[in-house]
Image (tube, rainbow, N blue to C red; front, side, top):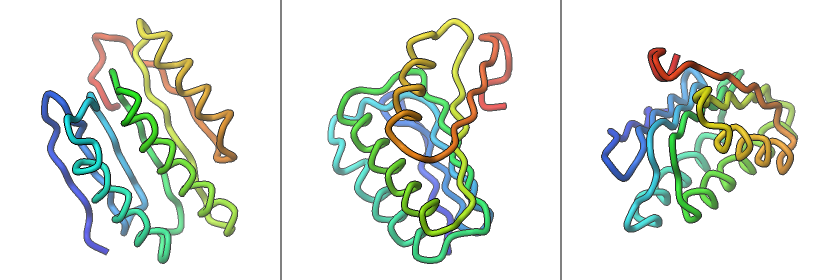
Amino acid sequence: MEALSIDFSPQTPLIHFDGSTGLMQIKGRSIPDQPDEFWNPILNWFDFYILKPATHTVFKIDLEYFNISSSKRILFLLYKLNELSENGHSVKVQWLYRDSDEDMYEVGQDYAYMVKVPFEFKMYDDRDFIGS
């Protein structure tokens, strides 16, 4: 399966989903003017991925800010991870957040509560290389 790569912009995050390795990354800000135009191709790609997933799927989320429409789409993706997990596949979410951003940590906790997929929380210092 061909990887899905979308460069970041001031309003949209970097997306890199690699179906062959199972590593999925979302990083940056997500406040798109047209959320369906941005998120629908991502959700569609993931629908195809879950038909023939990699042995292990790791979903890394490192967002500094996202709006409610993006929150809804991220939750859709997490529910799709539930499907993978329920079908016996290895799935994990890595939720990255800055040590100065307690709110983003709490949002990750909320998501972890809503889905059955294991979450790993990784705090990094504002001075660290982002996305480590």
